[in-house]
Image (cartoon, rainbow, N blue to C red; front, top):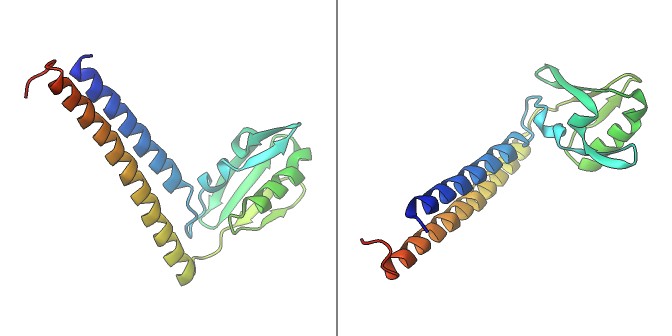
Length: 151
């Protein structure tokens, strides 16, 4: 196998890991309204389970409010249940046409909790990147041992 293919596959794996980290970080609830916090919440709809962003329009009209406008108004109660079940620490308010979620201010305790979870998440992704780099180095050493490449 050509050495360049090892590098390209390792680079691709590392990019995927970094993209996963970005996705995870965007879903963390901070003091500002962020639609990414609720976009991936799974909702039981029409007999199947679908992500929130596939059954409703999600908007952020101001810094403290998220509005969810379902394409089918009959899905309001299912969306409300899914948000409550997700345990994101926010309470939905159903007004018959849309659901509003007020994002509470961050408390000192919540800030510390968020910082701790981000640190833990970052360490997990560092380990994943190290493992991918280790696999690359092992493959290169194997090629050296088999005399396919020289030092």
